[in-house]
Amino acid sequence: MPTFRVEECLAEIKECLEQGWTGIGYKTVAFEEAWKTYTGLANAHFVASASAGLHLAVSVLKQAGAWKDDDEIITTPLTFVSTNHAILQEQLRPVFADVDEYLCLDPAAVEALITPRTRAVMFVGLGGNSGRLPDIAALCRGRGLRLILDAAHMAGTRVDGVHAGAQADAAVFSFHAVKNLPTADSGMVCFRDPALDTQARKLSWLGIDKDTYSRTLRSPSGYHWRYEVEHIGFKYHGNSVMAAMGLVALRYLDQDNAQRRELAAAYDEALADCAAVRPVPVAPGCEPSRHLYQILARHRDALMAHLNARSIYPGVHYRDNTDYSMYRAAAGTCLRATRASHELISLPLHLRMRQSDVARVARAIATFDG
Image 1 (cartoon, rainbow, N blue to C red):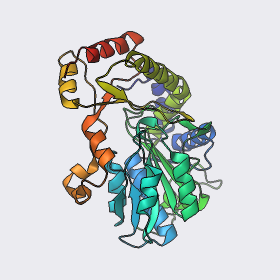
Image 2: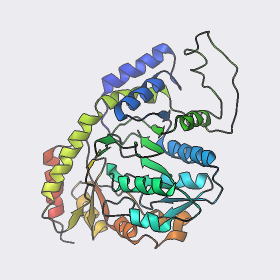
Image 3: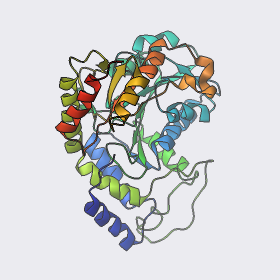
Image 4: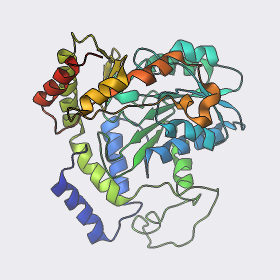
């Protein structure tokens, strides 16, 4: 359930309308600069969605590394499908590795799957948790692999005091309506290498070498209509209306995440002695965004029905991707992820909740006798 600062958002959007600039540029530039300042990341490109950002990340890294079709990216099956679709969209092969107790990639499982065709690792910070990301980053450096961080849940997550994304060659954040930094839909792709950031900007605007904003308001000598088309690209760029909303949400991100962590701590305390469920732990050194509060329950579906009957509506994040027909060839290869997929519940966690709401959910779980 997203929470918007409505009047502040309207004021930012009103500036776009008054300026006559609602597309790429203007507020998108301002948001990119604000995001770089907030995260400490060197580059940031605002895009239409995190799914678009993931595809851009894979596409740009593939081109830069001269990867061939059917080269491999090691990834997790416990994620939203856009993570692994981005690999297939570039004719690469997702190789599924199992997860650890944090429900993130297990470094030992990843290392065991590296072959001469492995080109990258796709790490997902599920729920805003960093898992063993530092170990994965070290493994990638040691084996000459690219690291792509699907940080869709990690806006505001810090690992050993540093914002998530600093560890990766490319990090992709989501600003979808239900995320911690909500717009209607948008995202940010952050490359470590500025040359890759430049390439991503061309690809996200149909391969055109400069966007319209750069050719007008930012040009010292007026509008320049000529441009070059250097690549087959996509229409993945973000727009100023979404960026306007993002600028407002960013002002409150740390405050909002702190509130989410307080609610999560209340869940931890309330469920500490509940034998029916096991909360998913947060990794040491991680200050999580707490996009999700996840528990494991042996009788998940029955518990979900029990909670629904009491007007409590949790979610499930996510179904093991190898359950889907297009990834089914890898079914049974990641036993821990498969087991978690059958037990996972994401309990209600949003900014309109209070400690009393957490207590009500915990009491309802305590009455479950399945």
